[in-house]
Length: 273
Image 1 (cartoon, rainbow, N blue to C red):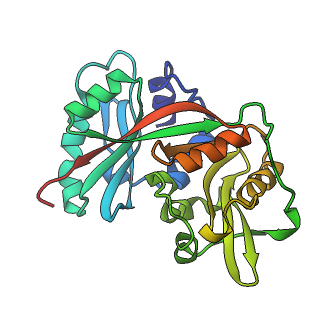
Image 2: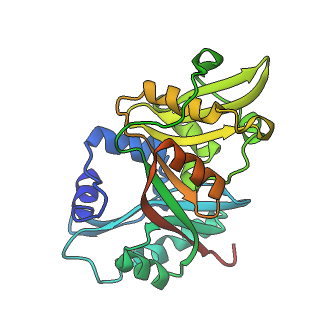
């Protein structure tokens, strides 16, 4: 799987090279891959194409999330993506999956065409932000008010967040990856006012939320700053902010983040579940 993944993404716009250890973490923990709904195509004993999927509830429906589709050079242009979906469809129906979800770069015309041919439709547009120079702007020092925790309650955290994250950054999905995530909370007594969830190994921010009545007080920016101090790299990233979330986009822009990539979320409904 690792060798084929690296080969399939060898000419991808985003650098997807990673060690076997990092690949295992990405697929087994972060994605929480479901092998029984993850098809592959072989030529002899060589894996030449794959769809790595997980399963979770998303937008009120049971969904299969495509965390990586790849076909190695020499086998592209043969409709293998559609054939893999056709092959695995009976198993997804058997499990009660109602739709398939994935993200694709907006300028990846070949992949978009392949997914559309497989029955996917474009939906949300996501922006992906990077703090490439590592310098944050307009930060208040509230470090004495934050505490580091090892776990969270999905119900409590969901009660203060208004933004619907992409499927891979849902709290129910992050639960599978807690060993590699860090969490900082801001509480007033026992009341949770704000939190940030991030990966200190690579600076990836998965979630950031502040209770509505405590916004615009510098808490969110201070959380980002404190998270950065715990990260190995100061070049932070935050993925898949929907373009209509103008307030969130303005917040990260003012901190010094810049939009690095655009992605479409695409979905395929599964009929007759």
